Structure formats: structure tokens, C-alpha cells
Length: 297
Image (cartoon, rainbow, N blue to C red; front, side, top):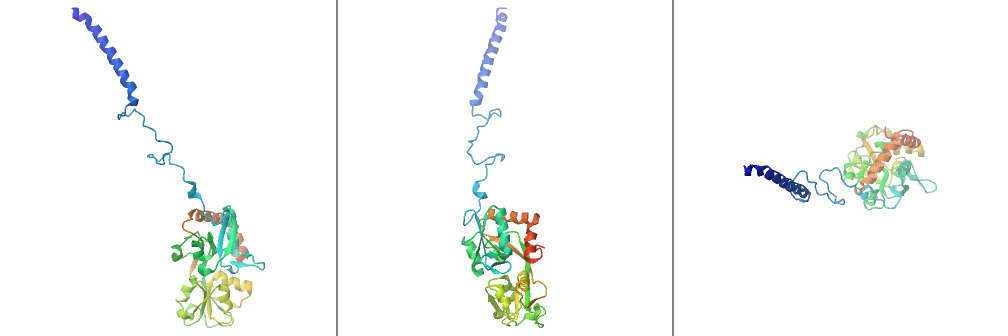
């Protein structure tokens, strides 16, 4: 009987002890290094550059959006300066032409001052790779071989190689009639590759510019010239050369802007500028001014 009276008191005491122990364990849990799912993870320092979740990736370095320019605030772009009306010097010695105007418009749209310069065509790629200028806007055809050395933008006009002969020449009526004939081409151009398939290699004559080659048709120094369709057509209109085209274009060519491979931001911005020019009609206005046609169609 005496033991039964003390039993409730003992139970109450045990309950109080368990409550106190439980409370201490609860307070100690956050400081524990145990694996309880209720314990908050230690936050990573704010300067860490990695994230497991991928939802808090650091901002991209500013350098990734930087254009590499040979002169701050300027887009320096090169051409031969010998291909009228694409790029040439006017009576005041200033560079002008379709390529120049396209380059100036692109420069404006990417917030840079245009700085057109000339370089001999034979070494124009080497000059770009040597960082003499930022881009080549000089009617360069995008080829796989050139693309191994530099990047190309989207085309800013489309053309192709065209055969031209003296306007009184009735013996050459197609490319099949060129075997054994002397063909003039610009040195280091894609037209030279076409010429050696149509005549003997030793009968392909190189020139520093298309115009010089075309001017040699009249006196008979060459039998035919392969040049860009645009260049030959313009020579007839602008210079009154007594020449005529033969057949269709030999191949369709995408004429694009060359940029160094380590300058992807500039390539991207030029592409955006070309697209905006086409979209708002500025491109067609420039093309019609120089050729009376949209060169992208």
C-alpha cells in the first residue's frame, strides 16, 4: 500500500526528467554535424563560382562580350580599293563604292567609327590575321579553304564568276570554247581556280585587279576574262568597256565579311547589323544605288 502511494509521484518525476532531456536535445540539434534533414545546410560563400543547382550561375565575364579592335572606337575594314564600283578611290583619293558604304552602315549600327583602308589583295588575309585591321569588307567569297583561316559573316551579297569577251568576239560562245585560250583573272582569286579547268594552266594570266584584266580584252592581250558578274556588268555601264558576258554564271558565290577567329563578338554584331539593314530596307536602298538591283536576291 505504501509503495502504491508513491508510484504517481515517481511517474511524474520521470516525465519531468524526460521533458528536460528532450528539450536539451532539441536545442543542440542545429549545432550538430549529424545528417538530420531539418538541419540547415551551411551556405556557400557568395564569391563561389560554382553552383550545384544551376539556378544562381554567376554573371558572364565582361570580356566575353568585348570586341577586339585594332583601334579603339573604330571598325577598321580592308579592301583592295581597285574594284569599281565595289571599292575604289574617287577623284579626291577617298575610298568609295558599295563595299565602303556597306561597311560604314555596319559601323554605325554597332556604334563604331568607320575606318576603311586598302591592302593588296594577294596578302589581304595575312593582313587580317596579323591584326592590321578588324575585318575584310572587300567582296571576298566565302570558301571552305578561307574559312579554315578566318570566320565569315552571313553573305552581304550574292554573285558568281562570269565569262566576258570582247563585244565583237563571235568565236567564244560558251565556256566550252575556252580550251587553249588565254584567260585573264585576278591573282589569288577563286576565278583562277575556274580558269585552270577551262584552259591550259600556262594560259591563265594573273592581274592585280579585274578592271586591268577587262581592259586587256579590247587590244586582244587576253581572249576572255573570268570575273565577278557584278564587276563586269558595272565596267560596261560605268567605263564603257566594249565587252560582253558569255553564258550563265559559272558558280553561285556568297560574298561575306571576314573576321579573325578569335573575335566572335565582332562577327556576331556584324551579322546583327546586316540583318537589321535588310529588315528595314536600308540594304536594298544601298544596293539599288550602286547596281540597280538587290544583290541578295
